[in-house]
Amino acid sequence: MNETILIVEDDQEIRQGLRDNLEFEGYRVEDAWNFSDAEEKWRAAKPSLVILDLMLPGRSGYQLLKEMRASGLETPVIILSARGELWDKVKGFRLGCDDYVVKPFSIIELLARIKALLKRSIPPDEPKEIIRFANLKLDIPNRRLTTSDKVNELALKEFELLFYFLNNPGRVIPRKELLAEVWNSSPKIVTRTVDVYVSNLRKKLTGSGYEIQAVYKVGYRFRVMDEEIQH
Image (cartoon, rainbow, N blue to C red; front, top):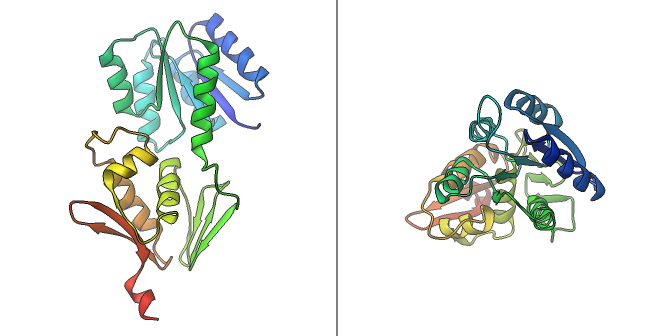
């Protein structure tokens, strides 16, 4: 196990308890007790997962989460907070957290949630480390997309979205399905998140021989480009 977990928690006792349990499970651990310390640590350590308290000295955990997501960081984030009101949870998920755990909490449950999120970060059923489609090469461990034009690093959700398309070539995939399978969101959620990520992926697929085609009022289809078919 080589995943690094960043703990952002101002309570020293909780922070140390989390560190002890995570290190016992085999994780590498970094910790921070305030906003500026956390900001420095997540940029330098590039953690596989962040455990984030909301009530930090100075600026809040919400502000830190917003800054991380605005920077393009797709690392899974678990909010760990004594604030258990519905609005607090909704705000956390809207800002981009992946899970929300209310204090006091069960360490066994938290460890299970951590393992589940880390397991979803890389598709578990893919035995190969490299996927090749025409002029497209996807390096799974490094989340790196290579086409005939260039090499692109992929954010986590870009990677997961492209991986889902690659496993469903030619099929029209509704936006709601993509939200459910890639973002683990309820099908009832209406959002333009998928469209934004598709737009980013389209640019990075230039020169691959493949395209993501919009299907009006339904979703998207990953397919060979028309000019490639003509050859």
